[in-house]
View 1: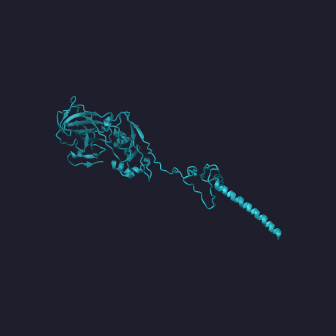
View 2 (view 1 turned 45 degrees about the vertical axis):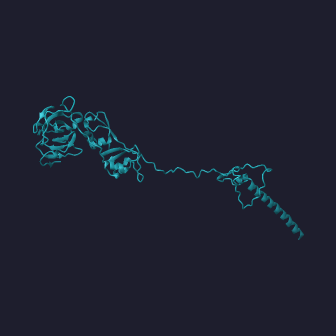
View 3 (view 1 turned 135 degrees about the horizontal axis):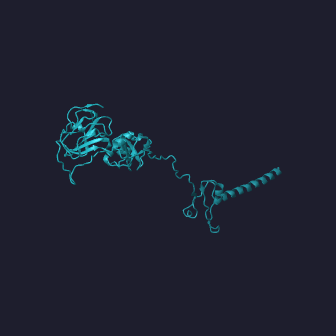
Length: 367
């Protein structure tokens, strides 16, 4: 019995010693932050070791129990820095899925103007309207007789116009500018407008299908007139117009793309002056005037001119005064023509007028 008691006493002594060691270790962990860092290796915080005053000058600090938390006071916050956050996981990361608008990717053909090119002949070659040549090249003159040989023209694949996007513009504002549906602009594939964003890039160029920014005009060279000042004409027209040929069978009507009427007539049929005036052009419309073939232009002295094109013969000369109903030439099939006919125009100050608004009598379509 006494042996058991001695053994228990020795064992209890060991337990007391072990407990004391554990208490010492716990106290060391609370006092020394280095041990705290070592114990918490891998934490997201980086602890800064405080600078401690010498033990002789330090006030007595009561021991803390395991349930208490040490909170630095205002007086010690400057000497004992708080743990410093050293983690980048909270910083914003660029979104790899941010939308990037695509630039339009047009691949247009380029046409170099030759001596015998006209707006109509170029348009026919590429299957577009003459207006579309202006739509793709707004920098060129709209007078067809100023189309320069050697000029490089951008040829659009469809009828329409190019639009350079300005800052602040929207698809709705661009569509309203040209009077076309927004859907048509979006649907054109090389505009690269991707739903649902449909973002526009300033200074990029959109193709606007179906748009028009103007028409070509034709100004016949004036071979009659004084030197300088306003042209003084020897005669002035009556202001009324008669049919220049006997036929009334029309193969083509006046429109924005066709500034006159085409009257089907057998080749060699007589052509008459529609009103009194002075002949200002009477020759084959060579070079950039090729479309018209043999052409007569009469200025009526009142701001109006009449054009007679595709003639097989010319019976007048520049500077000649003619009166309404005078014989001036014969119908033909010269220039860019698909058959014998007369192309007839009435122009007011170089702007086309619908001849049917000035000519009396019924007509019929032969197209």
